[in-house]
Image (cartoon, rainbow over all chains, first blue to last red; front, side, top):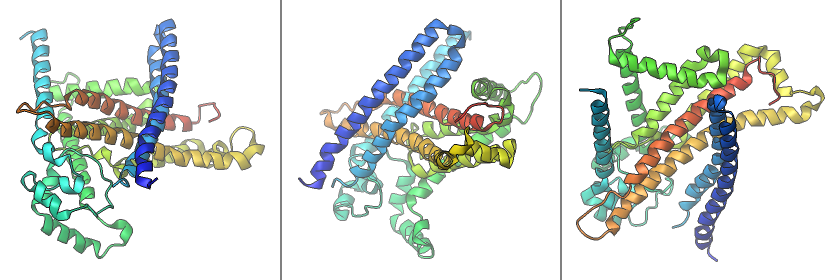
Length: 77
Length: 321
């Protein structure tokens, strides 16, 4: 297999796998935050801030995959 | 005019602006965004020939990705020989690592435009301060500052007044940089890693400076060593690596998000030509709302994480990081 074909196959698959994992992670985080907000609406602001920061950390993993994809996509010519 | 009418007028004007922003670049992108940066920087009428001339774009130093046209591209395209000669003359005297490309000048120009706009707004807004202000701009700035203060107080607590200048400025600056890409013929400078890394480096240096000043040098060492002191051969390298990873992850997150969103817009703008007929629908239109949402969230996350890093270094926090 030529390396261009390998890259063309692997980049979308890898990005999809990263997005899958991060989707599950963010889903769990937001699920917990929503439960907490529903139970204690008086600390809604704090939970929201913490949730957004946590979601940013999780989402960064997909972004790393996206950056790698951008870097390697230049090699498919 | 009553309040509701004014609100709807504003909403309609904003929506019209967004529609213009979505529809305006489509003429150029029909040809431009199908090609890479190098070819896209040609003027629209010469794109076809120029691309054939260059053949395979061998200038592989650029990352090749889709991009909406911006006005600096056109300046480069119309004065290509003069600018390239000028840059080559400058680069001949520089070491290879410091070589200047037109892309760098492009991004810095947009940064400087944003800085000039923000500075002009703040200076003219705060010229006449009063207890009962009459200037609307001043009221707007004050409301923004107060709401940012309230937001960052959730992270920084009683120390907010000291650090709001840094993190609040970061928020406003990054928000403007991100949203700048939605204006026709403009570009988000945050879609380049260098600009973000510079800001993240500022955060890193400021956090280390804060840690040394607030804890004292011994306190800083103590923070690096961690809780059970006899674990220091393990904990000191770990903490140092953690500190060094922070700016990289901070900048890469912003860079990836904004680059991805701009690429999405450009790809969908390039898809317009696939629809047959005279009707050119702005296909990227729904994604501009997504772009606005992501721009705001990323600016919020960058500044909130800067605030969190500062808060972790403050002495009264009793936790093992």
